[in-house]
Length: 269
Image (cartoon, rainbow, N blue to C red; front, top):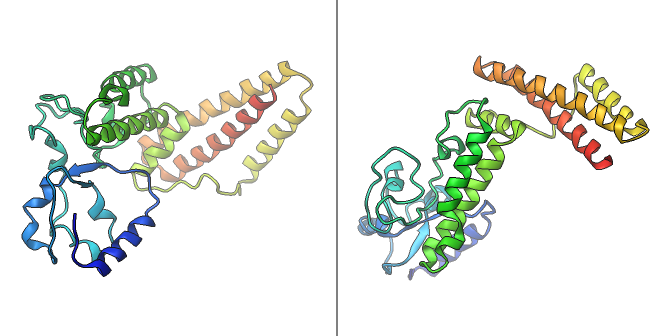
């Protein structure tokens, strides 16, 4: 892209260098060609040029009209960047059914939808693992090492996102936190304990771990901690289903500290 407004482009470049978010996907510029007349400056675009798919959404207002006058819609991620075909089903569109090309990451696709799951806490982890392996057979970067640079980048991004989705949903605590995030509820994992009962229980566990005479004693403490984690995991499931936000957050706080206690025990074993 050639921009004939150096000052404006320098400001834009400076802004982008401050964007410290994880790598984002790209889409072909054919989405922007139809908006060429709305650009406020002269430009030239090559056919194989690419821009980040959610670039427009990352700009402050003063940059939002640099490339086009409208935002990308969800339908933009339901059409293959290579052959322009649409998927035949409502399944996650990570790979084109027609040309088998790996697609750009759709940021609106949550982790549950990637694996075809409902947004609920209780899931079958064995099914999750199977679907994860199926995706990796289609998305692993090694499978497209001879393809275009764009598709290699899409494969790396999609594969990384599927791995993150699998790790998040495969862990009871991170799954609970992610579900709350989808509901617009922020979970502060570093929040200081203020509940006297929980604080007393945590101190008791720590003392037991420090005073444990051998690995057998540590394993006994670990079994008790894991049982408590399971109980509060079940509490969260009920609270989330009934939309009791306070109780759900309380359960997450409990699970967080039991998880840390278990990690400390593992270090000592």
